[in-house]
Image (cartoon, rainbow, N blue to C red; front, side):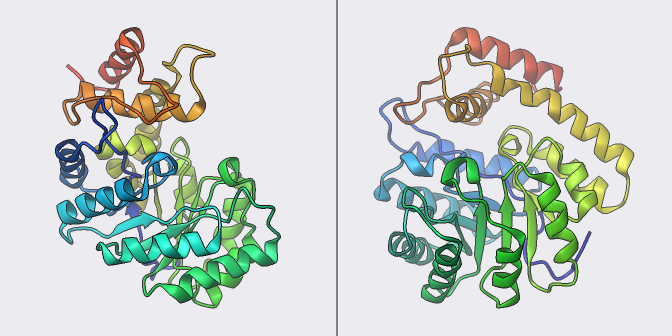
Length: 310
């Protein structure tokens, strides 16, 4: 791996947001989920990301999630919180809110909905960093925001002390490797992969850690994978990754043509967590739908094959 001074390393799951059937934040389930992750030995928590349904939640719900996660974590690991908004002023407002609620770092995407030039994306991150006295990480997720954060931009922002890291969910593994090579001697910058199916490969490329949505379901598996990679035991890391690739089949449980990719993924994670007894319900935000009994049975079979469900 590259730079040993990276501020965020290891497994940092993007925490899902348990909901009641009525659509309210299920605080007891969220507390149990955070406990489930901490007991597994994760190195951090990322609240209000894509897996956390941040785009679906009201500001009041986002505040509630931040309060619950930070209070339950109680300083045991850093809590990164999303300030994912369409434009700079809205992102700054959200970043200030989560900073006041105990976040240890802020995560922001490029602006979206608006048509944005790379110079404006650069200014967007600089303005957020200047407005909040917390570390800022960039979230590269072009499938959602329709802008790719190019290595040149990220390196410039990191060199100037604007960014403390990047969560790469671009799916462009070649670009990630090029970034890792270029950032190898850059102090204070964390490279985190969100590509949960190739964490072993990304660690070999130079990632400092991972932000795997599937890590909600099997955090211990990702911790084992990470620890094996750190000690250079690539055979163990690959074996663990192969098992997790099989488990990721839960996201294909949704009946074809009945759910978006977001609903299939988030719904699968929540259904698996319900089956494991971590959360009470597999409710998701509208217009998504909860997975049904047939889909639940398929997910249970995946959990059993992965050794998670007796």
